[in-house]
Each structure stands twice: as structure tokens, then as C-alpha cells.
Length: 167
Image 1 (spheres, rainbow, N blue to C red):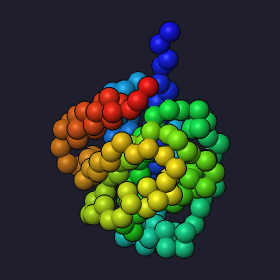
Image 2 (tube, helix red, strand yellow; image 1 turned 90 degrees about the vertical axis):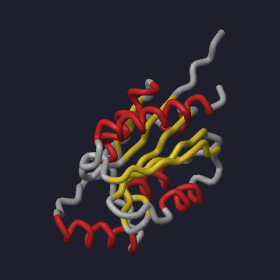
Image 3 (tube, helix red, strand yellow; image 1 turned 30 degrees about the vertical axis):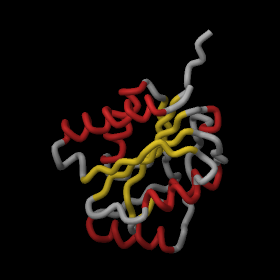
């Protein structure tokens, strides 16, 4: 009897870049999607968005999330995505990591940014250290920059990670 690997894409997206990539990955490998939605989403735009977001990261804020629709601990392969804020993952991911004890999972990490990825993956690997990392990839403003190519790049990477995952 064949055991089917349970696959999940977990992400937070403020402006839609990470959502675009997450949805492409989930579709490519037939994964469920878990969107991290803060109870009180940031409404800042323009420069104030960067100031507010950076402050949240520096103060290590953990925003309350809306109820999670999937139990991530029940999945074998998990792709986790975030926008880059102040050179690291966004605070909703911090909340998720503090609430969900992921261990012995096969993990792929992805990010979307408008500048540099910074230490985003390094910090995610540190907090998820009880897992097996299969790869990481970042995307530069996919909604603005070659959207179809970015979607294909995301789909291809997700399929490659799925192949690396052991059943």
C-alpha cells in the first residue's frame, strides 16, 4: 500500500508577493495551504509600512493570529514562506513558530523581498532546528518583476523539493 506524503505550504503575505509564490508552489505539488492571518493586520502603506514593520521585528512582536485551518504537525513536507522585514521573517511567522512545535518535518523555505534577503533563512533554520531542510529560495518582488517567470521558478522549485523529500 502506497503511503501518500502530506504536503503543506504555510505563508504570510502583506502585499501579495508571498501569496503569489505560495499558491504557485501549492498548485505545483498538490499541497494544502495555511495562510497566517493576523487578527489586526497592519494598515500602513508607503514608508510608514517599513517603519512599523521594522519596529515590530526589532521588538520581537508576536501578533495574534486568526485560527489556523490546518494542523501543521500532521504534515510530512512543509514549505514555509515570508516577506522579508528588517532582513528577517515577518512577525506572523514568529507567532506561528512559537505556537506550533514542528520537529522531524521535511522543510523548504522561501521568501519575497524588495531589497535583500538578509538573515531570513538563517534565522528560520535556527528556530526550526529540529527539522530536515531540503532547500531555500528567494524571489525579488515577483508581482512587479517577470511575474510568469517567477511563478514558473516557484513551481519548478517546489517540485524539486518534493522529489528530495523522502516518503
